Length: 399
Image 1 (cartoon, rainbow, N blue to C red):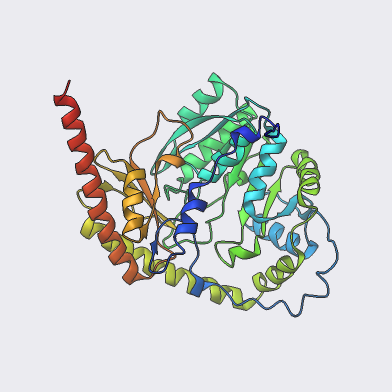
Image 2 (cartoon, one colour):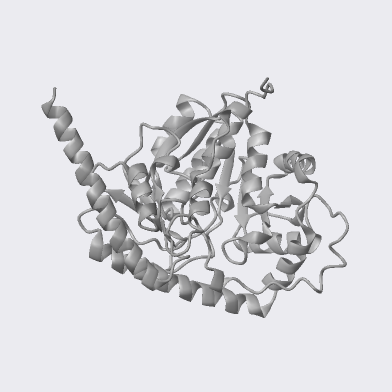
């Protein structure tokens, strides 16, 4: 007899990114699928100096030195943030989960961008969130759409990725950041701001956190060290309004007691060293070269297939296809050719705003692999779009 599980268990879904990443371990695979930092860009890890101090249980809030460093950095960005408002998490993904536990009962409405980070859809969906998507342009969401959506059905919170948004790569303008903050302050709707890519910037652009403009409404700001150091450490953080912080700490205690201490100790030393600035400069040069390689390859092969804009930062190109195409079917064909990408469909929280698209990561593959993989991908998508057009023509003639 099958065990009786919770209603929540019935809402569990698999992450397409994680499923694809397993397939990308095949020899010779060119992967544009996950947001993977380049292995050769990660700093070497040496835990010898921290092993003794990290053996015992630690504070749920995180190591004081790391929390202090985070608070100092956020304050420099214009946020009103003290060390007492910083919680170290097991990657920023845990922060999203804690937010879901804190705010969401079954049926709670949540406003987020369309498209948005697919793991947020997965994490919040488990708790029974009902999503409403806000259409996303190259400059961010439309503040008027946000105001109307809040008036129509007040959400538990608004979840946004204003800087180098995943998957679209868009970066909100200063005008939109200020307008969104003003609306949230007026309505009192909490903001969850996810900001894991802000340090990966390749051209000048405004990156002021939305939270820095808030004066009254509660907020949670999510950050990560995974994209600029080593994701295997699984160390991220959140900062929150004082009214929310205590609840988040208690949820963290009930989840995993505390984040791994040796990773926190290593990060504190590395982030506060002169070597970190040199590492970040090397990282930006490497990713800037790979971004340029992908832009050149897309211009050569995707001119008639898609529309896109080179991102000012982050790790992704977002391609809006100009023809109808079953991107999931194209993915299977691409994997047979040993090239992987992310179809756009899973990034949309609701179906009505969906359009054919794909997300391509440029940080993990070499420039040579990018050139070859993009060429193969253009052939595969052209074939998939042609096949879909032929099927539609046959279906029309058979009516």
